[in-house]
Image (cartoon, rainbow, N blue to C red; front, top):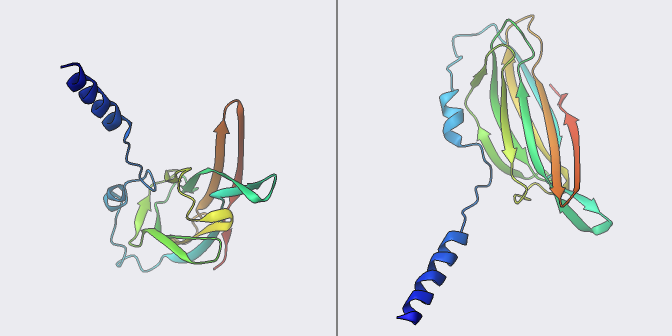
Length: 169
């Protein structure tokens, strides 16, 4: 009886410790809810933005890295117009494509922000990861803003820093 009780408790403890981790905490279904057909909106201006992101940074030497959580912020800076983000592609340090977050247009209402979160355990991007965003905006509308906030905390120590996107097309 005592052995059975110990075995049952041990099994429960092992099962409760098992936790499935997602690569990114933004569910792809969220992007499909934002999907929009912009084929009839032919007067939109096209743009492309590069954003540097860091999944890891070097610590002490080139042989030790520290993992970071990355929050990628997609912001509509217009207070009047809806804008459209066409694609969000994530690349690693070597320029190899890691994943596409969405490749059909999504909308951002005036002053709205959408986010992509790359969890601290996801180091697939490495020390020099980056995004390429493609977007369309109405003529005369302000350009979208793409920012990266990287952070990590361990014990009583924390670090954080930000990057901003650069228009490349």
